[in-house]
Picture 1 (cartoon, rainbow over the protein chains, first blue to last red):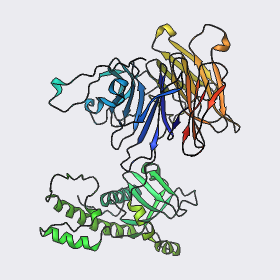
Picture 2 (spheres, chains in turn orange, cyan; picture 1 turned 90 degrees about the vertical axis):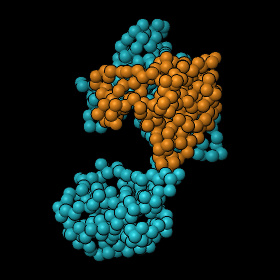
Picture 3 (cartoon, rainbow over the protein chains, first blue to last red; picture 1 turned 60 degrees about the vertical axis):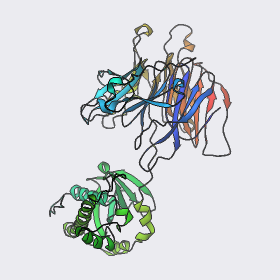
Picture 4 (cartoon, each protein chain N blue to C red; picture 1 turned 30 degrees about the vertical axis):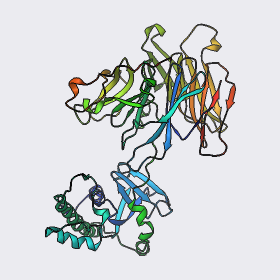
Amino acid sequence: MVCIKGDPVTIVGRGRLVAIIFHEALPLADKTQRLGYILMDAVEGTAIVTGSVAAVQKGHKLTWAGFSNDHSLAVMDSLGLVSVLSSASKWQWVPVLDTLGKKKSSEDSFWPISIMHGNFVCVPLKGGHEHPDATRRPITTSLEMHIPLAQGMKKTCVHFVSLHHSSI
Amino acid sequence: MKFVSQQERSHKNLFNDFAFLLFKASKPVGRFKCEILPSSETERAIHFTLDKDILCVLTNSGNFKRIPLKTVLPANANISLIETQPPMPKRRLNSKVKAQGGDDVLDFDAMNQNPVGKSKNMFVDDDADSDDEAEDASFIDESATGVKDEFRAGFDKSFDDEDEKSSTFDVSKYSSFLRQPPPEPPQEAFAPSSTPVNMEQPNMRRILCWNHIGVITSRRDEVHEEQNVVDINLNDATLGGTRHFMDSFGLDQGSLGEDGAIFATYNGVSDFEGSKVFFYRFDTIGPVKRKDWSATLPAGENALGCACGEGWAAVVTRYANFMTLYITLGLREMTYFFVVYNSSTLQSKIFAIVY
């Protein structure tokens, strides 16, 4: 029942929700990908909300999408910023974790898996690897999510409380 | 930073120096004859510009290609200089002298004001930077001519008639095109938390999906090479822990949901059929025919992604200009429920929802 604007980038589902992220327009000259999302109730086949993936930072692209355990749509971009969309935030993208600041070296990265109870579950990668080695079970870690704030406000930083998804 | 001339260089080094020059000048410095992929006759006699480590190539057949340098060099690239275009107008050279004398450099060509890699704080009136820019300018001038001579000496390419002909290639026709950065390609479709196929070792195990339900991995079977072994490791041990099955469809994408796992192939089964979709149900209670099901999409439809959840499974497909989402309720036989599409604009993409 729904038209989408462009080629799909990824699809992800949980419970009775499905989210499709697609190209809304051609990328900008600085390589920023212009993406849109549609969040649907898959059982009824109706769209809940559509909009732009404003969480993709300038010059970066989408690298991950998933649902948290409270059914909020979460995305991560190639810069390493994790953002969450939920009805509690009036369908606005809220940055909840900046993995860039968690890196110990510029070659480190975090390969995302899921978001559980306000924790970002991921595989820490070292040595410039982009993906974990699938032949052995990689060791996961979880990072506590909090809204990235300016330095000096860390003591009073509001920790990310998992956004409750009403009625679903 | 000075350009050090050496007589003996590998192609790669020469190319890197030019890459640096091009990058530094943020516009094409010279014109090159570049033979890339010699097997292809149409991809020759090229204008190229450089965007970081991507070679943007304009072929004589009018195609525009973006090639990462790693794939081009050094094996199948053969580059020779045809002509060096002065990187900046004469006016700039004069103003450089003025700049060294301490005068202002405001009459610089607007394009050369900001070298690539140097971001300018618009809130700061940085007169101090003008000297640096002047140094950059002199650096590009010297090195461009230096490399030109060195190229002519180092590559003993005879400039035959063909080269002479191509050197009269009208630059002004493409100059505005080359000055602009090429359009950025849209990012390709991907499956969240999956690892790509290792092209060097296609038999390596890869992760198809890893989420809160568990992990799906797939690897080529050692005995039956046309088959894959798909392993599903569930986090919830009450659902059965580890399961595995043999896949003869060549399923290359998959996703885990609460009820089971959905898999799909990108390539069509045959010329008359599209991608294969396979649903693996966790429940083992009930009739066998309600356990797993598979379906074949219509011809030309290639699955780009799949997902499933409580009571539904979905596949996003590509069909010409249309994108289709199939949602099943996990029934063995799918029936088309409704198909809606906007026929007024071919650019619009559609969902067809199938129960």
